[in-house]
Image (cartoon, rainbow, N blue to C red; front, side, top):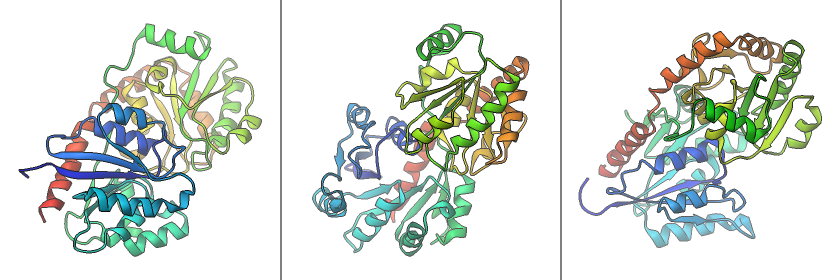
Length: 367
């Protein structure tokens, strides 16, 4: 593609500190700005934690929400008419459906959608709306093969060869701290003892992340490793309920902007999720050299082999989760699996992933 830059809008539900939202920020840092003029729009005004970072990267950001928030599709329609984008890249199902409906007609922008989650896990109205409008996408990017399978099984039928592309994104931890000094600093920041076994997790406090199972597993682990600590980074609707369930040794750290600086202070990373597409938090932990205990869901087995970089367990099984965490109380096993995780993470390439997405853009815009 030559000539003027293509004008591209990235459309999301919110810009909080979730995995999909963080992926947007990671990718914009590696976008080819000589070919693509990128802007971002989002729906929920209270989910705006990443707006300053996007603005600092020179990306115009448009908030479609506000009072009354239900008028955001009208604001999206006005934005599409005013800015006359060549391509809209959607990232969450509800705004994606709106964009597909609003972009009807020969003058509408081309549409690319990134699917971050398993289709069958969406609520039924969202699944139906997806099924009715998915064919409007000129191309679809799935963050894992498991997600791609969910698309085809759920009704997102291929329009043609190459319509659906799997792209494993990755973290962008350039310059993140590591080593003994970083470990001491992270533990001091969180008030953790130097000699404690520390298990950490990152994620919104929601039912699908199932931190309730992790708390139950950690209570079992404390019976074997009395001084162990559990750090939960994140916030969400279940926070009060989870705090009521938590026993000794559990720290709720809230939403943090400095997760890469906290990771060196942990010994084991854990995800107890009941569903995932491909969690950026896991890939960040592996890049930091942490062994992981995670559930065997979604695309997780595509980046972590059981017994190599960590342990895979069934979701919703606190006993199995506790047993796997107990195995990693062994520092020699942690060291071996952590080294394997860091080696595996060398294949995570956020810059390469963005180039793959831009090849999709070029193909769509050329047709």
